[in-house]
Amino acid sequence: MYDFIFFFIYSQQIQKGKSELFSRLNGSLIVGVTLVIHIAFVLSVFRKIFFHGDEGYNVGGQTGDIVGKFIVILIFVSAQFYYNIKRAEIILRKHDGSLIAMSTSNIIKVLLLIFAPLIILMRLSIKP
Image (cartoon, rainbow, N blue to C red; front, side, top):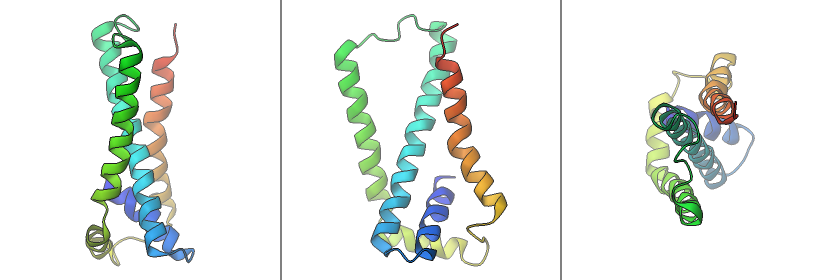
């Protein structure tokens, strides 16, 4: 799923004439954002199930905020290193000829993968 998002963004940037480095960094950044959204979504669902809303949510206080920011930065940096030049070539070979990056179905898939969990996450975070 994340390789598909990377391929979609990477190939779209290459088609626009952007450099390989910029396209790879842009694709891995979007994958990092998607990972953060998905992790926040899963944590929010667990919080709703096990803590019945906001009880026990802010246990760490300011320390928890710092740790959370560190984890987000770690996810972004990990995505940058994961999608290196060699892995980008492997993903491109894997999808070569089998997918047209900018087809309507692929655009809908990427939007759903990124924004559906985000919308549900926002809905879960609204206090009743």
